[in-house]
Length: 295
Image 1: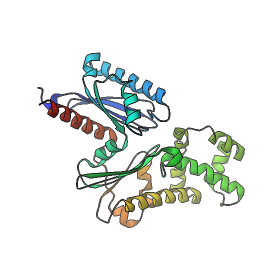
Image 2: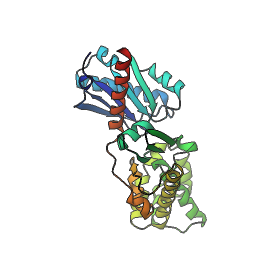
Image 3: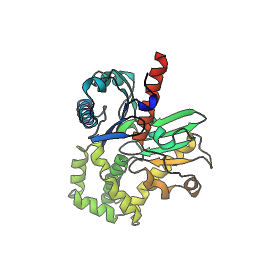
Image 4: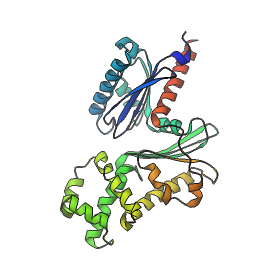
């Protein structure tokens, strides 16, 4: 039996905007990046991106088909909603043994390692997680229709919705609202575009909001403050008390820091690693489980 540290594992961090795939031998990791891999949003496209990335990575790492098939693989993917979908995906991938979960455990493991704390992850989607005394609790991550509050796509949707409030005279106009009206050629253009936009496309508007908020735009600040209130309320509901660390992760997550209370800001800590690092650690743990069962 080869030593664990010398055994190659494969890990996937697949989100709604990009997917990263890596192989690691315990010291060196090679990785590739492909497009979105949300299996609930577009299952066929996600399968295509995953298999393309796996093939590219195998070529880069000098691994043949049999070696890839025999690799212990861990996949943390946006859109995995249960065992049925995970099994359906597994049948389309080249691995003999793979653990497929949603993208929350790998983000938590990457941010905290084995330490206690809380994670508020806001990328294209969003979720919250806690790890205390070895117990993991996950909340959110239910997608753009039923959840994803404070995510990048939520921020983008809110920007367009609040701009329409300005048109109706319900909210005071702002530079951000005027800019979006010009960008989409008026209210009718916003409504028409929004009816066809994907979560990723809504999320692409988030930088407009974060930059406008930094520049003092009242409408943009109200959106960021609302997102921060949601995160704070959820973290507190999950058991956070002053003195327990909080990591803000994902593309827009760290942007909420100045909108949290001073007490929460004092407990903000940098993540130990990213979700891909977490996926690699979970792939290693999965391989160790397999080896233990064989002994």
